[in-house]
Image 1 (cartoon, rainbow, N blue to C red):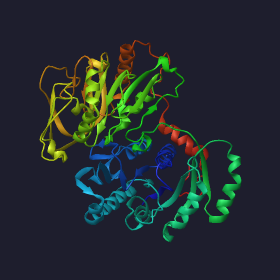
Image 2 (cartoon, rainbow, N blue to C red):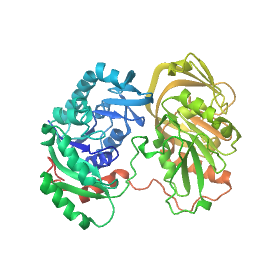
Image 3 (cartoon, helix red, strand yellow):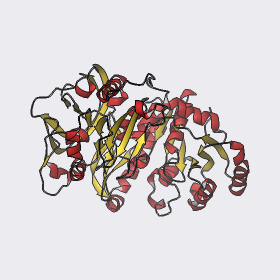
Image 4 (tube, rainbow, N blue to C red):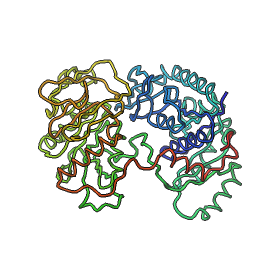
Length: 491
């Protein structure tokens, strides 16, 4: 059976996903058969595999490990939908919507068995399993049902690497406090710590590192410099809170007067917002997450992203007046998945999403489509021929991506189909169920070019292309700064 390394954290957003992805790529490139694993993930940023949907981090880590993503890499996925309720996905298939208490009372045991079985299959097929924990491993109120951390460490017989983020301050207190609070058998499994997001002279940490190691007996395996390898974000921690504005991509060295701004409404139930990251990485493109009542006066294009609750967010946009603002906007408009549904004329069977007994909801009316909700869920990875129309004019060729959605949309009037059987477009509005559209260079370049043209500006002479390989960048962070000595692997 495989050795398992559990990358656990002192808190959320400390760099666990990056460290796990880096380990996967380092080991894969060293000739080790390695697979990622996260017993239970909570994220609305999901990806499609042949067996169903998994969290984006495990999809990314599978690619880093150079293995096809499968549902075994993330057997339990919770997709929050508001009001303390989440959609439960087990082995890639949605099984229902549950409040937290109901999930723990009636479904957690089954979830644990699914996670154990998935890990056993991975362990039998590979030399090493790199497991990622969730949040903090020191949540004492959850230790009896902490599937991603405590349970995984036990059933996988895992060696634990504890990750802490120095940027937020108090890194040594976080590490020592975590070691004090974890169960005794878990404490014995912690083979080392990794400090992330360090800026400055590492020698200035020497006294603290020595004091920590002398106090706890846990070696510091590495101090990772502050660096963003460009991996997709797992959850909305990276976004501004609802009602706040934040701009991504403004640190590219292109003057603001030579740039364009793509406005993205910060939906209350936003999902799969990683669709926007390729645009923010383009020189001269600013992706602005804006409050729902924000003006679009400084926007050059608008993208309506995916959402876990299309009807809820559509009604929130309408209440804030965003529907009128988009209708009056004369630049390119793109709707992705739930955003595509909102741009249509009508959503029927809307009560399926829990909106009282209202079965028919009026859409923005910018595309001639009608969407009907049902219990059936589409989860599929696809390759399609794109016909460049509207805001993607000139982008003709093969693209790939994935669909994860409930509801189907049919044309009700004259519009051009950008794909066979999917999407609708006019001269200025484009909608599709295809996620990862802008990961495809031909689609991204066409949208950026048309946005600059609509704004009356010349695109930046700098071309980002596809950029550095984020998996290799994450691997370099790990390989250059982590001592593998205490780990059950070597590279």
